[in-house]
Structure formats: structure tokens, C-alpha cells
Image 1 (tube, rainbow, N blue to C red):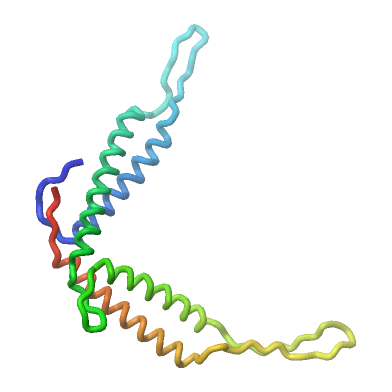
Image 2: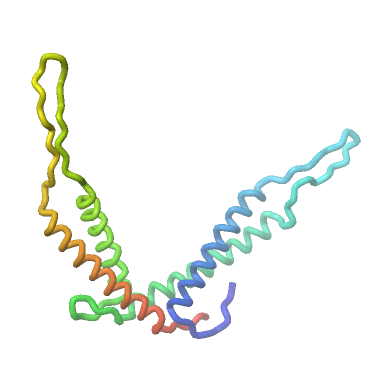
Length: 179
């Protein structure tokens, strides 16, 4: 698949990658269904093709290869541009889009762990191990400072918002040339 030589923003490039990825999945599904064909053979030897395949496996495979090659070129262009673009601020310094994307991913993982901890509820449940045994209470309590974790969660959310805003701005302002 060749591209018309033109200038596009990173946001447009991401949309192009998404559409190529979708096309690749569709062609992959088509290839799966084209692996076989069905025919009916009459007693007299006449064969009738009853499959609904309008294209051959080879035709669809050739399109699939073309889309895969284009997707690789687009992804490489995106990655090279992300590495060269220093338009995102983090802790007062400019960082590349690649670094910003990796940082957002890491911050989201940390945020998930904190949210999982904060979703716990303390409990006190009366227990009895059987007839004649003493009753007791099983107490489940936090093993962390809930206020401190809430503050950390807020800081992480703010940092993620700041980075994502910078990423979005860089994606819409950075242009690349399709070849």
C-alpha cells in the first residue's frame, strides 16, 4: 500500500494506524474463512462450488501482506517521531513523547494498585469454630495510611492528566510526512 506524499499530524497518523490495524484484522479473518472451499459433486461427476468466496486465498493474502508492510512503515514513523519529539513537560523538563507514553503507563499501573488498596473495607466479624468453643472476632483493618494513599492517588491523577494533555497537544501539533 503506497501513500500519497503528504504532511499529517501525529493524531492523524494514529488514526491511520488504527484503520490499517482494523483492515489487517479483517483480512486475517477473511484468510481464515478462505482456507477451504466447498463443492458438491454429483454422481455423474459434475462439481458445483457452493462456497461464497469471491476471492482466492492468494488474492486476500497479497492484500494482507501489503497492509502489514504499510502498518510496519506507519508504526516505525510514529515511533521515530515520538522519540524525536520533545514537546511534553514533566517535572519542569521537556521529555520525548516515547518517555511520556511510558511514564503514563507506569503511573496508571501505580494508580491501579493504590485504587485497589483504597477499595478495601475494614471489617469485624464474630466467629465461632463450633459447639462449645469460645466465640471471637476476626478483624480486618488497613495496613496503610488511607489519607496518605488518597493524597498519592490525587498526585498520580494530576501527573497523568498533565502528561496526557502534553501528549495530546504534541500529537496535534507535530507533523510527519507520509511517503
